[in-house]
Image (cartoon, rainbow, N blue to C red):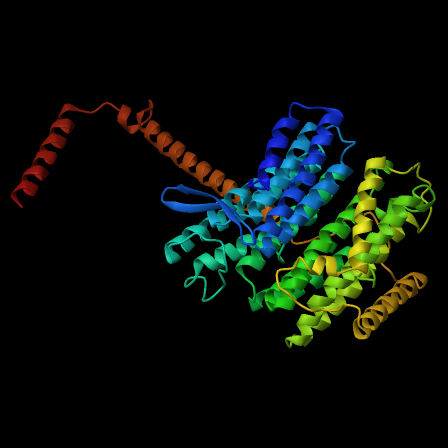
Length: 571
């Protein structure tokens, strides 16, 4: 057992990766998450509640590593996600992408094990700084602009977090990262609300989610897999740590679970469909955290664990399609099951998992959140989650594999992706099945001890009925030509406000301001010109100032002025 903060090996590997090439770099990047996971497992098993890395800056006592069951679960998850993503990207020969991805994974681990808010803030900013390079790594104009918008919103999140940390330190005389809560209004509890908003931006709360659906689909095929694993899950961890039982989260999460469905159904870009689906799954996690019971928290973090794996598998399969065909729009794909049968099967496993089919990983975690909702009196929220479950089966469980691999035959030249991509997808698919068949392997790692059985008659029958009738609805809508077709289009989302509306309003405002300024300048110049012309007119040959005056008239004028002066002086 070595007391080394988990982020340090990733940062060191990133530094060494600058000087290594090819398989040497790949083997190093594989070894780091494998050895790191083994070390973390020993740390968690041998010393529960372990702390180390105490340091002092400006009289603040900071803690680099603090572990409990909650942080350990996310630590295991991020090592697994890093391993899968690295294997998936082994064929990439891009130093920028590979180094940035290791720094990104290390930053996520640093945030999860931060024992204080200052350390959390440092890694919070590093998450934004390192991840944006995975968007820019695609090296085109759309990726560059999407990366700028992504980076701007995440810097805003960091500024809100910093403001909250300052207020929290003043109010509580501590920087320990624990439960914060939302007691009171913004003016009564500015620290809690600022930190809550900071977490909300990174968790893609409604009206703050545009960065995710804007930037993730513009990243490289491998970069999107990394992006899907870390940023939002760090935010979920932060909410579970600081705001468990905050009822507002229940309604925010229910909204997150429902509204992306409508966008995902009409979206043509299949990676953007998965980005909306990611927000939908985050909604289930946020609801569980908001309910705050041990079953709900366990369900939320278990679903976060499963989501990284099955959503990563779906992003991998779509990344493989993009890598092989160069296309990702549903209107341009189809018929690939003939040329990519392995990828098709692996994608279907991911689709079954996200749809919460029994014996797949999504079923054993999503049912926990829904059970907690109904047990705690959130009947309306339970119905919304039921609707969201049907919706996710439509857009991720059916739409993704159907339009990518079946539907019409697009007759694209295609083949199976590189072997390393298939290996990563196969490992993820095996994990989806293993957790679904033997959920106790995951349940034993959850923050709270519990006795929960997902495979009872009620859960299984309810889910099977939901899936059956959802599939029936999809088939009926398709046969009646009522299902929204895959069309090349642009769907307006909340990011339209700051990408189009606000710039257009500002541009129009400045245009009117410049026009007004121009008119005022012209009026002032015209006035000056008239004044100069008036003065000049008196000095021309025919002007009054150019005339000859008699001496007597001049003397009379001087006497008159002197008289006026004497009268004024007398008064």
